[in-house]
Image (cartoon, rainbow, N blue to C red; front, side, top):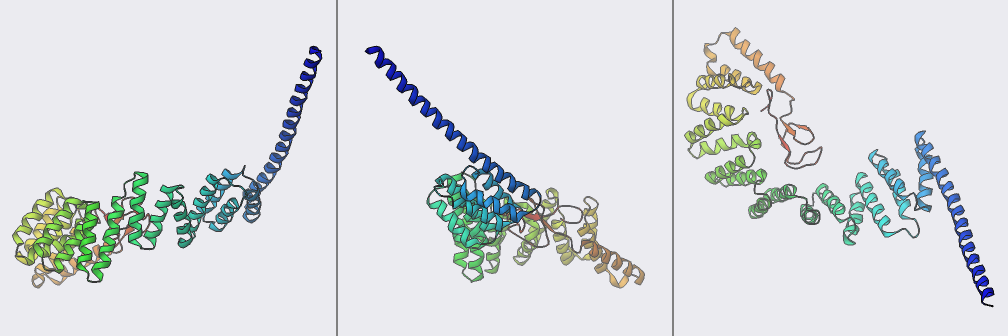
Length: 395
């Protein structure tokens, strides 16, 4: 009796195991068939892509994106590739198809939202991108990337207050330093206030910029310019000197303004002493030209020309040569023979042609060349990196 029960039990156990095996086998076959179908469609899309039939390829990939989570990763990457190639419309369609999948896990949905937000930014649809990135920040998904993108959007829209808020939040969550761009955002607000003759507002924003970045040369230069407009020349000079200490590379942009402050406040000898000391350590030509200009006014063109000639023997400079030719033309035109006068004029004309059209500043990050001051590089969008060029034909 007991023996019979054991056989019945074993028979039931074998039946259950066999059922499980058969079910597993059937499911495996179904999965294999499904995989084969996916494989066929996926490679069909790749074949279209390789044959440069992008429209047919995108139709296949969108159909895959709408129906299968198994291809999420390559589909997401493919959409990003379309965006980088400039085919933003295709990137948006593909990423939207991913989001439309039923029962898509939240971690996939938020990644697709982040991708679409970047697509919208590339397409210039900043308002739509802002909505998506704000949603991601609100649900605390991909927060650092979303905040960084929001900062970029507000920067493009010149909404400096929002840019400051987003940049500070990004700095807190990512631990990446943002003090340089934030200080420039405050400087932008200061420029707006000053343009509206709001000196108090300008000063407050500049103070905030220096609180964020004590070595923000732009804030110090702007403060000095405001003091000059208020005829507070001694204070302006102090601020200019702080700007030199903060970043000497910007000196050519304001050295003539400093010289004017010295002269107007009756400190010409102090100007001479400072420039002579500066020339010993500074590798550019601007201090030489500024001092030569002062010498011409105080001691005559001949003295100034001798000074420039002496300095050019120590450091070659096309701008210095141009100044020397100008001084030689000015020092004694009455005593020069017509032929000599014409010789100097021809030389100066040639040097002017050489300097004409040359970039005076260059981005230290991407190499963008500029003829005028840019606090933000128009090319790579970094702040405080477009500075005077040092070399034979420049500074």
